[in-house]
Length: 208
Ligand code: 5GP
Image (tube, rainbow, N blue to C red; front, side, top):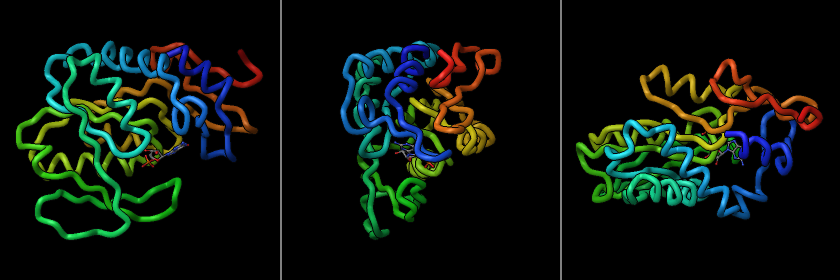
């Protein structure tokens, strides 16, 4: 998605070789127009399942707005967001899954009330970032506990070099990432080449 990649290049800040900060449009301040375009792009990528999505599932906090905008383009299915817990509380009304947070470097758990995810429901998972895949795999685990079905995983920014999408695809899930970062090097954000993903873009700060 060119417009997203261009925005990452113009506003994104590389922190070392692992972290990308995009607070100005995604994680602290929201560019509403861009979020509409992101929602529409997810609809285009998942057009074959557009009418089949019963629920959109994400995790708090940054995934919520992306998921809500995406819902608009899928006929307004409800958005359910997993809540983060610092400890694994036992409560029979919830599904729990442990997640190792890469950015916060701590183990936490995510939970969803059982009443918001039912057996047989068809779920599209949406999140802002895919890095090592822990958050997404936590959501996958919650869906499995509910005996619901995952139709796909939609990601705004994937950092391919951290291996999350590989893990998800290995488990048989379809992953659609709107911008795929191949590596971060000398403060430059290098996107995966179009020839490899069928999409345009291999920008760097100096490049285009
Ligand atoms: P994962 O569980 O795939 O390792 O990491 C995904 C989660 O960590 C995302 O939901 C996102 O909140 C956060 N995250 C991982 N890498 C980055 C990054 O480079 N920048 C930002 N802003 N968040 C990240």
